[in-house]
Image (cartoon, rainbow, N blue to C red):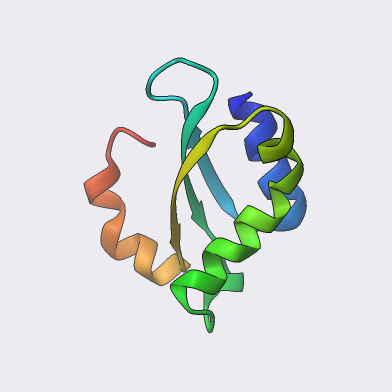
Length: 87
């Protein structure tokens, strides 16, 4: 499911850097970090809407919850050290 979520996000944002984790190993609760230049002039709410809209079908069928963090490439450069386990 992790790879499926990642591929769904990449289909909507092909240039994005996407990390998806299943921290509880339960196949229902996921965490995602999405880095995209598309987010540059969007509010945080709009950034999340872009990703969540791409995942609409997944939420209807297999994903129960997703903790989402979105970044522009510049903000990711400043924040990525806090997510060392992701890379």
